[in-house]
Every structure is written in structure tokens, then in C-alpha cells.
Image (cartoon, rainbow, N blue to C red; front, top):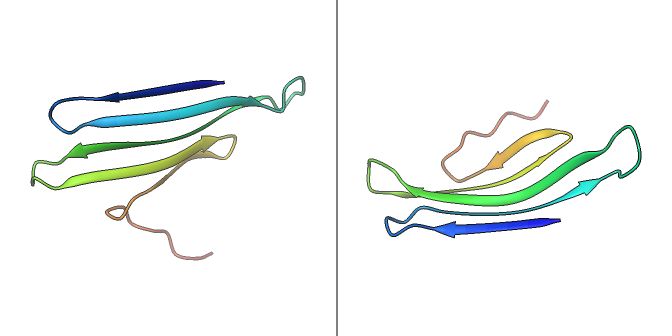
Length: 70
């Protein structure tokens, strides 16, 4: 397991926690949940939360487009 966290004086920050899953199998993977925040050129603070695992990087944020239901 691991945890990282940082913040800068200009409003950027990130946090993440991860762990190894399916230990001992051919499907071992690292699963990470986290978020990051930054101030855009427009002065708006944007935040993204995410899961990154065997299913890929899955970001969510109010400013991100959402794919239509399949």
C-alpha cells in the first residue's frame, strides 16, 4: 500500500492511495484512487478525482465531459 500527498503555494495539489490487488494471480494489478487540483489560465480552480486500475484511468470532474450511456 502507498499514500502520497502534496500541495504548492499556487493552489496545485494531489493525493493518491494505492494497493496491489489480485496478489499471486496472473491478474495482479495496482489500484489507485486519488485526486488533483490546479488553477487554470482562466483563474478557475479545477479538481479531478480518479480511479486507475485494471479497467484503466477513470477521471471525474465537473469540467470534464461525460460519455453517453452505451
